Length: 166
Image 1 (cartoon, rainbow, N blue to C red):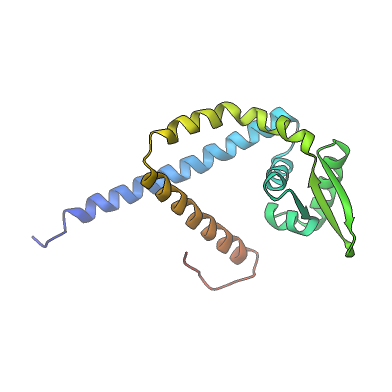
Image 2 (tube, rainbow, N blue to C red):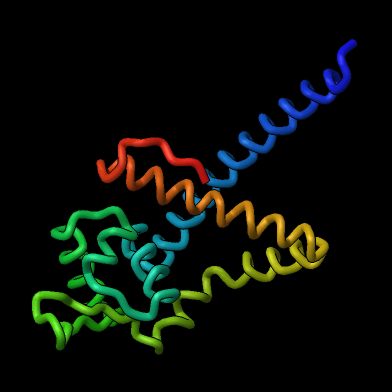
């Protein structure tokens, strides 16, 4: 028997389990986002925009389009709807009047966080059981996945035909 051979089937099985778990987590995350959006009376695209703005604080309409993978026309309609609903403000960039700067209204942040609070509390309890090394591994893994998603989005949008590895 070749050294290391028994390890390969176990590793392949573990990797397959990880990939399956990742797909299921992704699916459940999407279903969860739809349920949250419905509860708030928003579309998932609206919710993704507001989530992005919660992190970025403000962004151009073009940046929102890129982050939500929507056309500029769809983003214009979405931002108008979110502005009318009081979620965002939109002002012309004083240095470039062609650009629109969109900002999440701070007084709406608590309302947007509320549906996530029970899940966030459970996630905190889950993470408390992990060592610093395990949390660090998870952060590194998620950062690498994010880079892969961004590279794939770029490729799908036609910006890069070469395969990139993270």
